[in-house]
Length: 207
Image 1: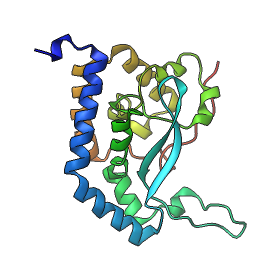
Image 2 (image 1 turned 180 degrees about the vertical axis):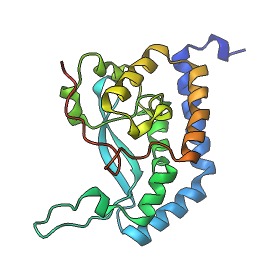
Image 3 (image 1 turned 90 degrees about the vertical axis):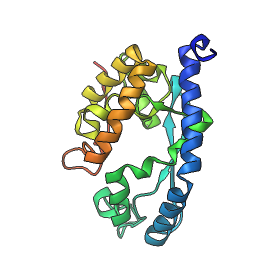
Image 4 (image 1 turned 120 degrees about the horizontal axis):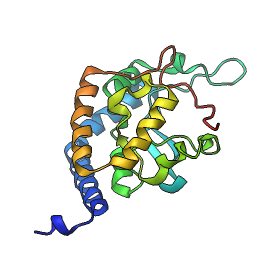
């Protein structure tokens, strides 16, 4: 048997590559359909590409389906998120289908199936030393925080769960998280923070 002699990190990466490859192949008709719907309802570009922070604080370009139109106010500034969120965008967020293009990030090695969610690089200097430990492993498509409240959690609660995962991650725990993620997505739990489309910006966690 080959798998038992592989290191935990190698087994995790092997699972990521196999799952991302199969996902992109099997879901290609869905991805094509969603791309067309986004193009017809929101225009070009179809994808939302943004720099996020990955392993050890390294930056990468995260890819998602775009869920907002590019509407501006009279001063040329983007309208609030709630006003720019389109009908198809609301559906994509509620069903978490906007996250599917991140399978490409997983295949590239930027992300894993399971890990702390990748956040904006401007948050890096705001973390406490304990919160910064979330970057000791690859960020994930889903994670321990996502099945325990998602965007309904406070930042402090979310980071505490992220660091707990860093200290306790295993293949068995990943399988548990992936299974629980399916249930959370079907129930559409924790998609938005109170009074906000997704999550309030993080403003700092240093003591």
